[in-house]
Length: 347
Image (cartoon, rainbow, N blue to C red):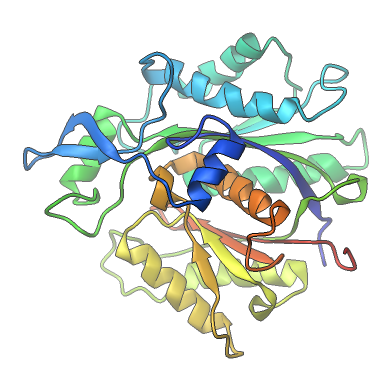
């Protein structure tokens, strides 16, 4: 292991299938979804199918994102016995700047409003990542630095993500590019929304059961989903290889994969190609989990949701095994991978 391990000790989630992490993870385990007609219409005249979070009021815009975010962050803060003793850094992931229909004021309002809603003060080390799905991995890398830095290391860090694709401008743009799943397009995704958060600490401070991140890897893919270049999965394979090297393990030692794949054939092909390039020992099966099957495409909230699902699966003993390979990618070619599992020598 070439990097210090980070422990994921708790999670919070607010998705289309549950307003807490236990409720969301139970629904995802049972393959329950909340895919229903939205108030948006596609070019062909049919209603767009989406996965909306059933909030108590019909909030819109930034106000909705704040509601989606505060619940999961509160779930994580409730796990810290001395949460009010010292401010906790919040590393917040939101939609990338180039996202069609991105909400105005997203970069300015969220931190202030979350503190107001929760009645807390966040640490000055709090940072926002406007990097879409890959933002969660970038935030995890920074969290590792904050937890292990020599001067004034933090005891806890929260990595959170909040996003919604159920915005008129976003849906129109993806519908025009034939990216949405519909009766006339089977090669598309179902738009969703979610807020999710995970509570992190150093692995040497863990008293109970935790999911340990032992490796992180990053790369870039040139054959993006809308490019004409043939796909070889060079970027994803490179990101996975880097994560495996940092964790000092091999892909054959992992028990299953969990990804941000949300239904488009490109992502399934990419995952298959990357696996074929890295797995050199025959395996009868290496499961691939994709929570988007139940909650839809949730963008910047994808990785915290994935980590919450993997943590629940480990603790409740329904995962295929303890070692997990997670990977995700953005439309612009950014790729990230994580190796998760128990500490070496742990029971």
